[in-house]
Image (cartoon, rainbow, N blue to C red; front, side, top):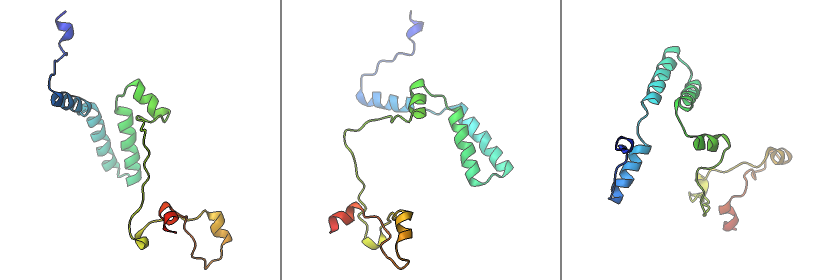
Length: 130
């Protein structure tokens, strides 16, 4: 009976619990590291372009990583890993001339005159500015 429970450890300090869980979740997987290093050497040897290198390394990582059934189902079904009861909205507060913007749809741009300066979609800041 004693050998069955060797991995059970009593942790009484809350900080120790967090430290142990963090260490366990972020531990290095030697198999994945070896596969990634070998693929990187292959990419350098065969002189792949940057996009192909990233694709090869990403596929190697996904294929070499061991995951639980729950993780695999979340990824394959595009189910979020978390749920938040609050929503967030990014508001660009840069100076007006430094802000990036989204262009109007191509259909609208084609119907406008070539000299038209109205080419950007109205943002949340624009809505409250007027």
